[in-house]
Image (cartoon, rainbow, N blue to C red; front, side, top):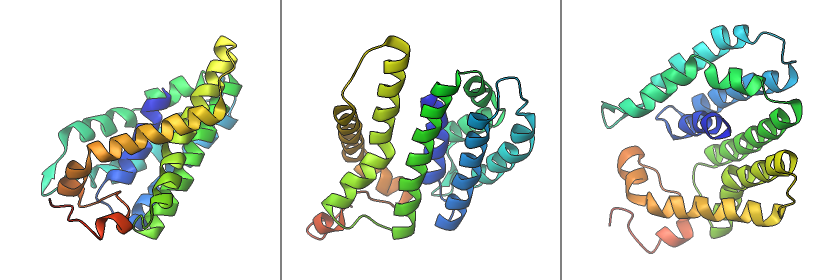
Length: 199
């Protein structure tokens, strides 16, 4: 459930809408998540799905066209998410687990918005910060959940670093795809000054 919810946020970050539109959509989505975290399990979330999530879905689908072609896989995911089932599942979790997932989503959004406003990643240190926001927070959330559900004490610092390094690996793996599909690069400019992404 955590992965599916984060994938919706990630899809917003990756889409072809303007940075301002992405930031607005992220804000609306995080509002929905925060409401679900705050509401009791017996409270309805139909208003959030019918109004807020429906608006997010319709707007996000317009940003899933890359190089003139609709990404059908992403479009199907966004439509399915728009029916609200992942949010209903999240609502049914115990409050402390909802809080862990909510914190992770909020942390990830902060990082994504910060780097959308910056427009690019300038230095290697900036890349580390970005990866910590978008993946280190996932490691921390999973560590908290394992601690609560399995009573296992894992190392928080290691889990954040592990998430950060997985994200860096993912960035390196997808350099060409990110550039050719969306025209973006997460490689710091201090490195790309000496190379061409096209190569």
